[in-house]
Length: 260
Image 1 (cartoon, rainbow, N blue to C red):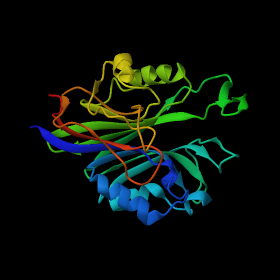
Image 2: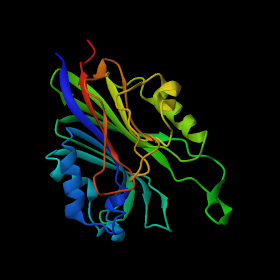
Image 3: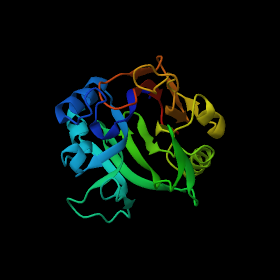
Image 4: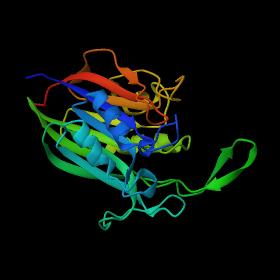
């Protein structure tokens, strides 16, 4: 049995709009609802952060999408400027930041996949200022095995590093980590890799190809939806200006069939 789904990935910039620099939860909810995604992968997601009104943005997105199944995976704890790596043992009400998946279809299994962080500091180039050495933040992927009509589909949300070369290391590691997950697999997220490079590095197939960054006049596709196994695009992908974030959301219409 072949199943058709609408899948989106969205780096949400913790719900902030560039139009006014503010986080408005109703505006964020309308942005998510407008995508009309059966499954939505999100990056740069806040939970209990003062800068995003202390909200659980994953829960707000799930309600807006009419998607009762959702999970947030923290990569950082604390507030901006005093971040530290999340261990998975956060306390209720503790400020966190990370990635998420919301789904209209039941999720039978969740799995968090750690990705290697660059072990040394990296020179960050700044406009009109000398470069500074920074340490990359922890990176991870969140996998959901989703019970869609016709059998299981695995969807993975991730946000890779901006450091050139190391993001290629991370996507190769993610490809290896996904090899035992139920097929078909869809990997979606802000990969910080341009164009068809993620497909060349992994052998995964692009399911949507449109520039997503910067927001107003996008020149580069750094947000991707990729497939492995019996999954294919059934319509051209689209990049959606939602009025929120500095990225456009990427949407794919797919058909998939579970492995026999």
